[in-house]
Image (cartoon, rainbow, N blue to C red; front, side, top):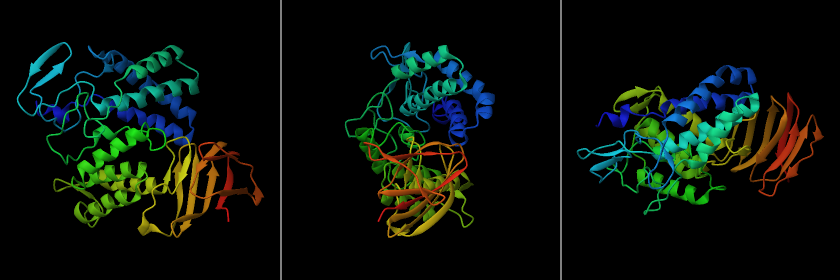
Length: 358
C-alpha cells in the first residue's frame, strides 16, 4: 500500500479547482468565472457524492483518504468505515485526512460564492454549505499540534517534507492568528516539529506558512536554508537531486506573502517583514480584489503605499502605522474598523496613495 501514499490523492483535483475561484478574486472577471464554473460545479457534485458519514462522530469525511506521502506511526489496522483491513507497518490509507477536509471547505465555500456572483444553482449552494458545516473539523493533538489525521497519530518521519495538515493555513485561508489563534498556535507547533530540513518546495511551503503566521524570522530562516541547501545557481529548487521549478515559484510566493497578504478580505501591508529587509521598495504586486500595489519602507516601517484599483469597490487595509489616504492630491475619507483595519471607497481605475501619518 505504499504507492497509495503518493498515488491516491482524491482531493488533488479539488485543490486545482480552487485556483479558478482564486483567479476570479484577483481579476473580478465574470466571463472567466462563467466559463469555468462548470468545473467548480462538477467538482463539488463529485465530492457531495464521495463523502461518507463518520460512524461515531457524524462528520462527513473522505474515504479512502491519505495525507500525501506521509505515514502515520502506530496503527496496524486502518479503518475503512465499512470494514477493517489490516496492512503491514507503513499503511497510509485513512479516512478524512486534515488536508482533504481543508481543501473541501475552501472548494465548497468557493462554489457557494461563485453561485451567488453568477446568480445560479441555489440548490447546489445550499447543499455545499450544508455539507461544509458537517466536514470533520480541525483538531489539536496531545502535543499541541494541528492533527494530520482524524486520530491523534504521530508521524513515522518527524521532519517529513509535506505539511499537508497546514493546507488550511497556506494556501488555504481558514487558519489565522487573529481569527483562530488556537489553530494558529497549533500550526506553529507543526512547523517547529518539521524543522528546516526537507527540500526546495518544502522550504518554500514552510516559509509561506510562517509568513501567514506573521513570523518573519522563521519565514526567513527557511528561505535562507533553502537558498544554501536546496537551490541551484540558476535558482531551480532541488528535490532528491532533481531540479524543480515548484520551489522557485514557491519562494516567489513566500517573498510576496512576507510583504503583502490579501487572503482575509483585506490588504495587509508588510505583515511578516524580515529584519534583514529593513529598507526596500516593491511595485506591481497584485492583490485579491483587483488591486495593484506598490510599497516603500525604511527602518522596518511603512513609508508609502500606492494602490491602483482595477475594479473599484471598498478597499480594506491593515498596517502597523496610521495611514493618510489621498487620490490625485485630495484627501480620501476612510473609516477605521473595530478590528483595526481601515477601509475606504475606490473607483475603477483610480490611483491612491497611502502614507504613514506623522
